[in-house]
Structures are given as structure tokens and as C-alpha cells.
Figure 1 (cartoon, rainbow, N blue to C red):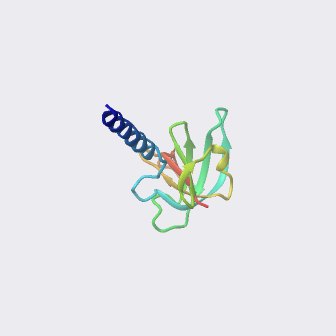
Figure 2 (tube, one colour; figure 1 turned 90 degrees about the vertical axis):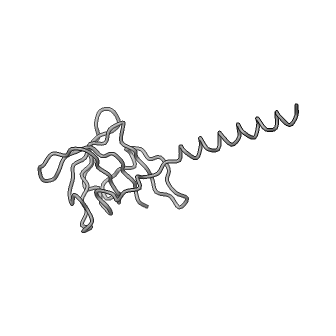
Figure 3 (cartoon, one colour; figure 1 turned 60 degrees about the vertical axis):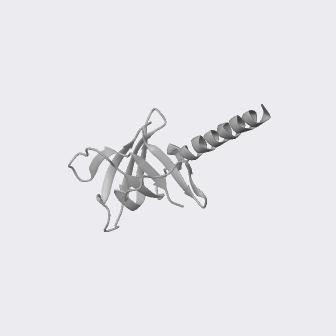
Length: 123
């Protein structure tokens, strides 16, 4: 009986660890659309989110300048020495260095306009 209980407890503990490991925030495995960008303008919205203007001179950037909506579906991450933590829209201030992933359609204007899927604040 004790052996069965110990086995069940070990299985539950392993499941909890796997669940927690799967919840660790991380950016996509692909290159960012805007690497090494700087936020040049922030427009807060009524819902605590808003729009950011990001510019990058990195030659790998898909977009060198973009106006991006930050929605409740946007993953906001803060790069730390241990990996990544959750960030908030308040962490997105002018001058902040960011990597940004944009998936989906963008307006073919200059600067492009779209929605940020992932924004990583680089410290």
C-alpha cells in the first residue's frame, strides 16, 4: 500500500514539474522580425495596452520601422539573467531596447502597421 502511494505521489510531483516547466515564458525559436530595436514612441490605449513605434538599423530586420499594436494576445517578456519573465505594457517605454516578432498581415505603408505577437524587453 505504501509503495503504491509513494508511486502516485512521485507521478503527481513529476506531472506538476512538467506543467510548470511548460509555463516558463520564452520567445519563439525563430529570428525576430525586428531584432535590436528601440521603442521611439508609445501610445497608451484605454485598456492598459496600446501602440509602440519600433525602429531598428539591424540588417537582419524584416522591418526597419513599425507601428505595432500591443494587444491582450501579445506576449510581453522581459529578458533576465536567468531566462525570461513576464512584462507589462508599462515596461515598454521610449528608448527601451526590444526584439519583436510580427506574424500575419501588416499594412504596406511606411512605417508598416501591424500587431506585435511577441515583444521581448532586452536588458
